[in-house]
Length: 178
Image 1: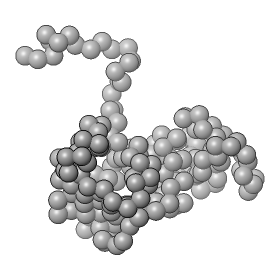
Image 2: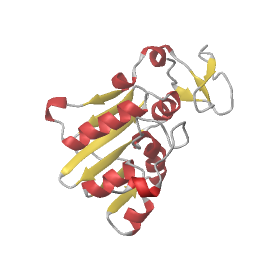
Image 3: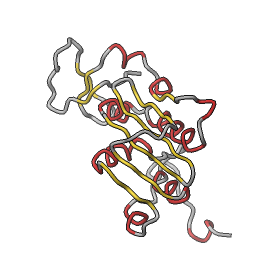
């Protein structure tokens, strides 16, 4: 599987001798030797994994699963900055760098912040939406909102099974509820 290092929307080679290729999303990407050998699991690292809280472990799981997609991997590797995420008493910092994503529970300053109760934040990552919880005050954001918008697709939980438009038929309403 090819891993994307940086997104090149204008289609230029960008120098450096790496040949452009197309990610699953159709965007042109420049592939580098680091990106060709890295796995999604190696791109997401925990600082002091033996002391990491549940929030950090959940974030690592979501990011690792989503970075298997070459288009999302390209987005993650192109991001720079850090996000402080707080859910109740748990707190982690996600740092995006050319080497991947580093997750730490150290409480250092960040470019953006997200906080709320665990139920509301789980709703955001499972696709229930972010606007409603923010307007109701259940999820609070601060700092760089553009960074938060760029990270949102990277932490969205994706269904492991077939999608709604695939070859399986949905249950009629009468069968869906007992």
